[in-house]
Length: 118
Image 1 (cartoon, helix red, strand yellow):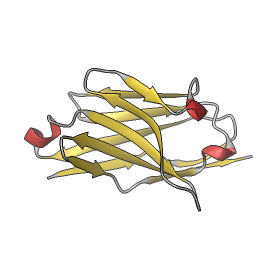
Image 2: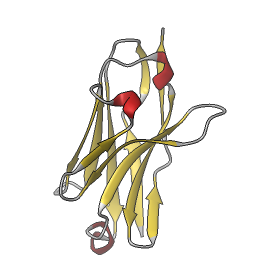
Image 3: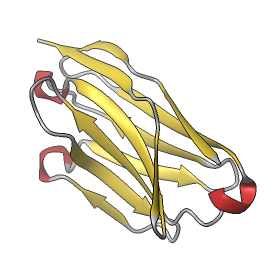
């Protein structure tokens, strides 16, 4: 099995920055088969949405709303994916979830709250 644990959330003023981390632990064999890591977020009353994703080869994909402000990266040796969030806006307030995807299986973290005050 694989566990994903997010950290780095918190309260920040608009215009500020946060860096989220997602560490994978468990079966090294399974972890190495996870191709895509992604960050999703869910605000109250809204559906969960993709924020950013990165493949094992380093290809990235971002939601239009965060392009130019957020950067996703991964350290394969440390089994960790990061989300650097700059120029935060109140509308970025949400619970942020980490997801790891392999063939026929997704793994989710428990989420970390990000609150941006105006």
